[in-house]
Length: 124
Image (cartoon, rainbow, N blue to C red; front, side, top):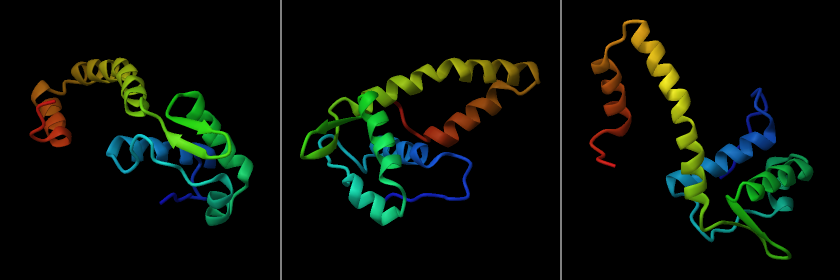
């Protein structure tokens, strides 16, 4: 389920965090799902358990997972809402990009075409 790209410039713990985030957003991991144990994941990925613990601690801190002593880490009830909120913050960055596109002469229709490509027929 989890994969590490050793050639990536992204730190391993960050790769793990991003994968959990992606799995939550795509529905692969759902509320209450248990993450693999630190030992199991360390053995399967052949990485230091401290690296996995660092990723799990960050996911816990952000409210994406909840740790239950002696039982493990589980996807929290509010994980998807937490991630949605974080991505809404990125809309400010998108506005900056859109303004730069407008200044560069890229038309609204071209931008809307990109939006349609990503969202398709979704009416959300």
